[in-house]
Length: 433
Image (cartoon, rainbow, N blue to C red; front, side, top):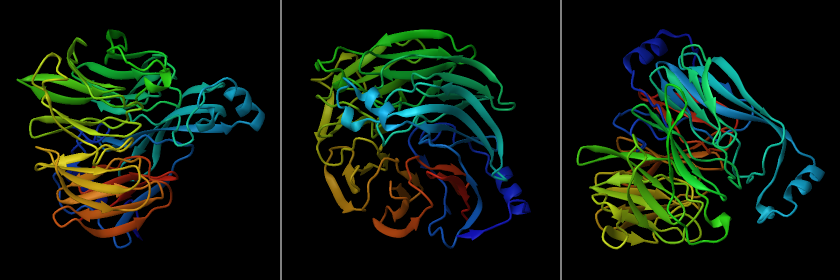
């Protein structure tokens, strides 16, 4: 990759011309789609505007607003084997969990033009962190920016609202549940309400916090779940905001159920029993008047629902379902009547969104947790092995396979025609045309 001086005039002009925000997980609409041409394809021939090392570990995706990039990280003090063994005592599925000795949770603000870290805020020093799955991090939820506020969420460890101008902490709160394997759900802002999903092994609910004060506006319990074991009740999905008959609604998949809520009041509008899936992580996707979700572990399915209804619409509003294309971690992207779904094991399935029929299947290779990005007709797929595969969605032919400097667990953001990519080691801005 070409490397340029960050003080060049072209960079300053670029940020002035392209002022669109990428303010939450998967972009302003939560759909991971941007209608812009000229995003970089072959990173070796593109210009890396800057590359900033990021200390600690965090799979939260970068968010962008007003020339600033926000992300979270966790500085982890490793636990001793004795500490890990003690933490695991009497814990179910202990073999898939590990522990840290201590964790410092931080919010970082990076200048989009220079790549300089302008704010590094210690939010909490956790001296006795809970167990976590080694594939997860203590800083996996993506922040959300609304106006001059950024909300950084770390699951049960706390939620903080900071000023985007000064990085001062405006409020903080904690909604405590047992995540079992660490936090995952990202916050979303609907009007003046911050939506927080709390699907633990002990309790499952959704809460709306007042953006101005952080005070609880409402809390709605999730529907009853058949599973007796709490491990099969947990989930990690992020709300998708949709509009039905002129009313804003929030669709939130969980264990067994996909539910729809009124963001201002928390009232449940409808629910659909999707089966016995759990640890559901992908967001819902909207296309062709349908809402499509993946059901999570054990065997993920894709379920398409007509969202025009109320109450339990399990028997009336499921339009189609299929075992092809389901994932347990990445969220699919949908456009022009097609759903592009990358599985955890690197199978890219393209489906017709109206009937669920498979259009094509291609093995990309690698393992995937990051969600894809669609820029016009260019599809970006980042693997855990640190390879960003770029595909022309019109032909489904690979255009480039870019090796990065670390694992790709976070989903990319877009600034103008540039990509903002977080790896396990760094945050990078790669210039488009």
